[in-house]
Length: 69
Image (tube, rainbow, N blue to C red; front, side, top):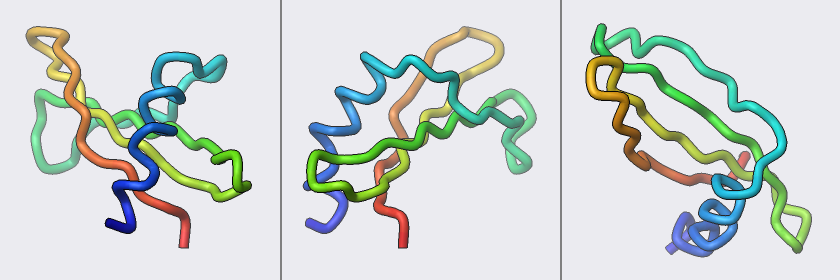
């Protein structure tokens, strides 16, 4: 439940972000790139969204959304 409350904000962030995410190669899987977006909710809570991209196909997958502790 803690992460679920950030889901709607995460989707909005992915669609409307004006900033590029921080990206790096997945150290556990050579053919993937991990992207991390940072956002702030209307209640001023900082959260992060992670997406992985397959290098070969270019497909992107939503991995998680979580608050900053």
